[in-house]
Image (cartoon, rainbow, N blue to C red):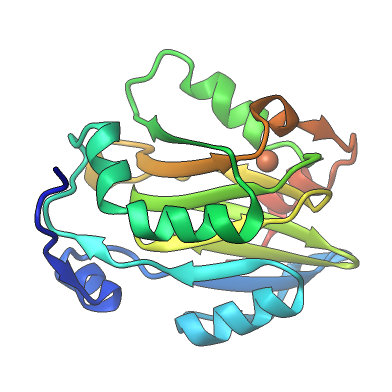
Length: 207
Ligand SMILES: [Fe+2]
């Protein structure tokens, strides 16, 4: 049986927990040193991403979920939101990914995620706790999206992107828990574009 949920507005919970804020920063592909536009309010972020074909949502946070929670418990409290996405977009599989500072293969994962790539199916991430940064390469623009707990992002198939696992000194290093949804886990293989865009932005992008 799913335990009773202690729901509260995600925005309020984030502030109570002292989490960093979701932030979108936009650049032209040709000028990583110059910020074109930035937003921290969720409605503006959702609108900008929707205009680019992405899906961004805020899901409620649950007081009983923390970094030690088992995958089954995480999936149980978000069952309604997961079921809605499954019905709307046909996802077949769901799992929980935990990134922790003490993982043996952390450097390997950081390197793998940080190169520009595409997938033949959507990349779907809901941040249960911790933080992670998506970089989306859309036409001649690059959008950096710093995600926090409560953020859902759907990156449609074929979108050029990379992912940065940021340091989180308050948690002893890189740290997040994310729900992932897939149509076919084999489809989630990364197809690298071979460009230097990601390296250039990770090195030179203005904050
Ligand atoms: Fe990806």
